[in-house]
Length: 549
Image (cartoon, rainbow, N blue to C red; front, side, top):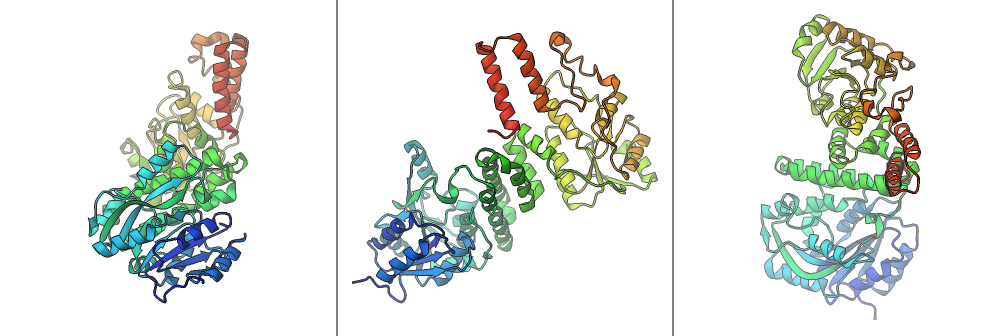
């Protein structure tokens, strides 16, 4: 005889379903086999294109506790869970993903704990399954286990959001249904399939006043499945992962509505960075090479540029060649010519130019990369191009719509002998200038050859000439001046036998390393161990820069 559900069951189990056909039967059966029978299963089919709808219909016919609900169009797992909350009739609600399952006594133990303690949030343990090393599974279970003691009042919200005493996954927990309904009112049904747990749990847990741990494993989580896997992917898949930005925006809005954003700002920024770092990891290691340029540009279309820059600086701290090469040839940087009436100033030295600028009708004031985003500057003078943040600050300035004008206090090849990579990054950044005030004629010729408006005197009149020139289109790229033929001679003084002149357009990564490889070929036989090590290193660099890795 088919099982039936009461009009008002104790527990509503909400499952968002999208193309989950192979895993769905095991999930449904794990809930049917619960030792606690007074439940309903609300399965929201989010317009699946496989046989998921048929599977739900089949199970619904044999067990009236299973209620399939259908979206006519795909709206994402966040919207599916919101639909499940609206449809739920139980006193409690728990969420299960379609590729996961419950231990047989999960509902019974969770309900007993909630009723015995009066808790409105019960967090039970999780067991990880999947084809991964046991050590990794144990570490993952440790990160997702319940907190060691009950929490009350503001301790509940602070415990997960600020202090990270327990995870903000929506699954593996039993909630009082009224918490879910109140939290759902704060969440718009936007399309979101990544970090949606972060969004929904933040909204719901903000109303929780009593948290209870349940140390028995009740939830079986399948690692390396669904949207959370790190398999090779394409641009549409990366676009779906970018819906994590939707979750971040909704969490911030929720915190601001509750008046706790200032108190939780640092914790929010950390979680925001984790979201961006996950996307950058997928971009760097899992995305098809042909899609990387478009995917990187997509990040800027989807989220706040200054926030992205902060995350990029941290993520690429040990190796920023790859984003530098990518962004330098992207469509993010070119800006049209135009008059400069308001000038921002980053770094020291404004005082020696201030009177001349004011007399010329140009308002100038100090700024920061962050304040540029909220201001109305026509251009920003960067007076400290030797800082480690120079590249990222240039991007922040230019994508805010401001022209970028660095003041170069030393010759263009200064520092080359100390660190080639640092010099290349600095040179690459300076080439993105809309105008550049150089310290000497040789440097001016070097950057003029790259198509940069350039003046070679560091006085106020030269700066004014440069700002006026920015009203006209940038100059065409010329051949490098004759005086540059030995510009790098100092660096190669001790390597004169192996000197290779820079290319006419100035040196860049790949031509440089190709030349080094050519030199090494003449210096040592291919089969030598040293030659193999050096060749392997060059190959890895080359693959990184051409996105062959």
